[in-house]
Length: 161
Image 1 (cartoon, rainbow, N blue to C red):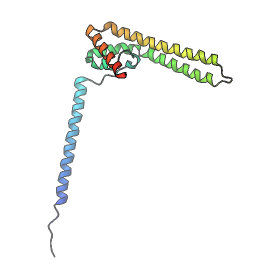
Image 2 (cartoon, rainbow, N blue to C red):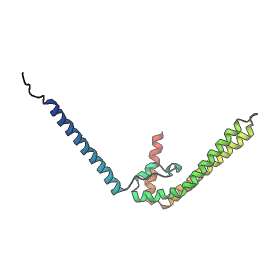
Image 3 (cartoon, rainbow, N blue to C red):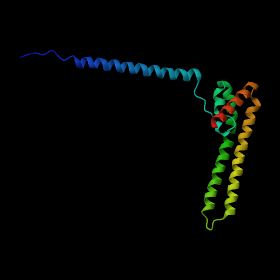
């Protein structure tokens, strides 16, 4: 009976897998630790609440502001949040009213025009409220911040061309 030496490949392969798993775990812990550290040292991410309602002020402007200043500016928008939401909901209700009017037979152009005009008026209110928010923000900007805002607005406009 011949006795063959045991195959050393499975043991060697197991060592590589173990090293690979340990390395992967270490990398995951390192990344997780970096994320947790960033969260606790810099706080959570700021949400650009209401920035979409102020189309005159690009989001990039808020992003370029220092964190504490950005919070002050976004707090102004947060004060308008309920009003923005109510105006959007009112616009949606008018749109539903249009859906009801256009299926009535015979079709009445006059009623449809009234509802479309009501929709335009409602969206005008929303735009006006956004304008008021912009004016509130502009009132507290420093000259340097106004310069930055002007630059960001021009950059956004140039990208659209």
